Image (cartoon, rainbow, N blue to C red; front, side, top):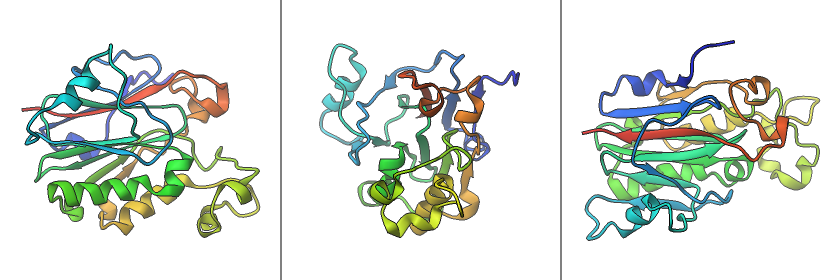
Amino acid sequence: MDRIQVYEFELFKRVKHIDHGIFTRADKIDKHPLVFLNQVHGTGIRVLKQEDPDLDGLAEMLNPKKERIVADAIITDIKNVYLVIRVADCQAVILAEPQKKVIANIHSGWRGSIENIIGDCVDKMVTEFGCRPENILAGISPSLGPCCSEFVNYRDEIPQSLWAYKIRDRDYFDFWAMSKDQLKDRGIKPDHIENMEICTKCNMDRFYSYRGQGTAKRFAAVVGMIS
């Protein structure tokens, strides 16, 4: 068995103020404080700014006794907090703009993918923080690969405009390619996109898979900026 526990993107390892990791089913997260969302497979994006007059929103998310903010993506320029996305087949997509010192973490399952939450998050980074798409780095976590992404009811579930991502002669879709194209369509450079290309269903010894196990458990993608 592969003894690697925490997986990292090479793109982010080159940026010294970015701290991140994909934590497998065997890991405990050693980062803190952690910012969690109530993920609902929607398109809501939470923005937390250092310049906000108060950070009650952040305090709520850090307080385990309070209900978490309902959203499936979060963007911030606040240092020394860690944004957490929990997945088990869905993609966690981490974004970072090193010049503006802005980070984001996205939960993009198949519903989020067809609604293009990834593109919306890039747009929000541009409008809210003045980020430049050509400077943004993107990492796609282990997730359901085209080898296992079967949609037998795709005609009802997936818009026809996205059927180009269907694997020929099979009811399988390449959501990895879809996410990469959504990033490129927003101006992200191809060499600024890193996909780990690890299928969660094919690697259930390391990652949780809803398709493979029907589990409610999740592994985590985490990113933060350190001072």
